[in-house]
Image (cartoon, rainbow, N blue to C red; front, side, top):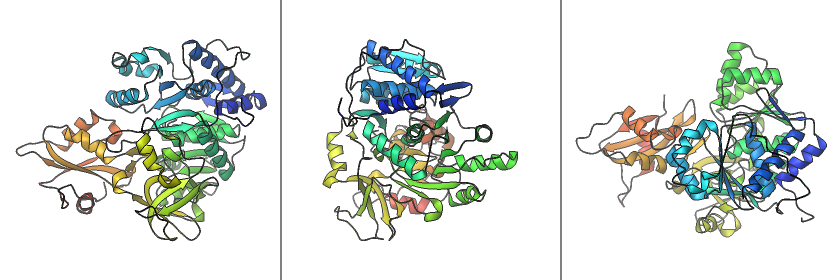
Length: 501
């Protein structure tokens, strides 16, 4: 073991040594101390090892938020295996793609998804090796003898593959190392000022980089993670009031619904000192107006651990925050040349938060890392004080951010084009008062065809995850074209990009 080594597994060990009897995880009636978590991690790691899981092997995981997630992550870290958490909202076809891409040697899943996965086993013999578990915790296994160490794992070794939204219709696996996570956790905790007295309520899914980083940031300072499997505004208000939750992460419409319920029920949210994420300015103002909390603006993506900018809202309202300590950020033009402060361009960055690359996509990785910078595909500008102002996305990486979920228009378009009555389609993001950004499909039908909006959205939901289906469908006679006969997206937006109501 290197004298400089420290991994996520070492974090679990450290907390067990220093905070053995302190609550690490609370979920319903289930309480797990840091000592319990350490024992569970080692027991599961021993079981996985006995079943042939080795360093570098992929372990697929399908579950809603549960204490078992954190145990499985720790066991993967112990073995040097790579965890592949799967979005539980995906269809069987989308899950199938991820399994085919990651080639896991083992599948762990909540029994809730037994039926969905049963139909995939014949297509993927490797996932015949399975460990089902209930919604609270992985089945207990004998604690492994720690005199027999697992294979040596370095901080630079990969720990997680998170599949990003489907650019060009194909999800890409972002390969994330122990050191990536540790760097982001450490500075997130430091910038916000978290300590062992903080309590984080896991509303965001743990398969999402933002949800995972926030949970691990609390572990970094030996704080407490309260884990819930679904968001219910009234229940969350009750938990915050009863358990004195001090921090939550947010994507629209979470905070707005939380505040609406708080007003109806008169809940005491005075313990909630921090909300981190994205939100409409009016909702941020409502929360800050309660007089006890800070809203933290942020910017990031899966490839950069989710949090590369992080600042208090009042420092620069409307911005995406200022870069965190271990991020070198710049704005470049279409030729990758730096632009002057205040001028727009592509956001590029480098530092320990940048992921290891795309799984089995060497050419794409080299392109993304060209010139010694990670090219985000996002557009923005830096003001004179270094605050980032997000300005959208480059055309080839156009993305719709709906309720915190990333949706690439091309993936939705591919699903719509499978419908035999659709001739052409352009999917665009439009303002949505509930989810921040909504999905709208502008379609041209084949001559003589008749399809309703409801029929088409139901068809899309049968092909891809329901959250990716259009919330509005507009049928037109033709779509605007460029000189090369391709669809002119900007003109489509100009003609049909009005807000969803």
